[in-house]
Length: 275
Image 1 (cartoon, rainbow, N blue to C red):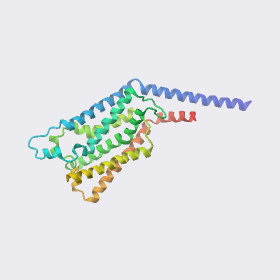
Image 2: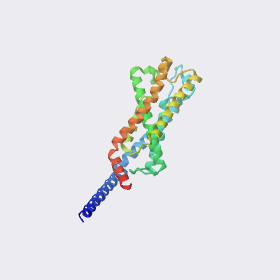
Image 3: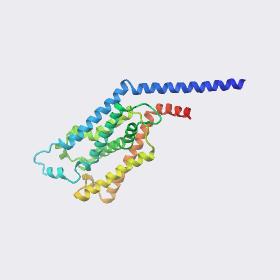
Image 4: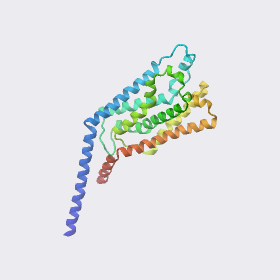
């Protein structure tokens, strides 16, 4: 009889703990999917999508080429166009990501759940983890480090007459800042490391190959820095570019796990209960 009562008490305790966990998860979802938090998330995605889409449009069609610039025609027609710059490719990635995230805000679901069933939600999470966050920080870090060391190696002063300061910050600074804001407003489960890292490395290796293709057909390297580096150091730079992207991937995963640790703990308890 004593054992029976003890067993009943243990079962009641387990049931109460499970109920409390369910209530906390429901409270978390109520706070996360409605009210001020949801409006903030929607605003971040709306402003980011609009900003990057306009940046792409301005980058392609509205840059003013000053009179008397001898390299005007050469700069306009150089092989590969603006698509040879990682900066421009990254802005396209950011515009795609924030547009997908915005569509998910409007038509999908942001509920904290064990496994998102929506293809839109899964696509949003994969693009952010694999491309948007790591490439944005890769671009931001590598650009500003080289710029502060010697801007002529990556963004010559002559470009100040062509490239407005606000656009420079949109494509080299805001990409990282908005990715961080998104990290703190969107709950997501990162893909498996094999899928995420493979996608990230594949993108960067393809870009390195693309840079060399541009060099082969145009006779010029994309960035002035590559012109002065000997072959061994150039190879080190390309490897470092890929490595930095992978580091940024793991940084994003690490920060995501810290920011959303309470939600992951609730989901883990729910999963254990189901099993």
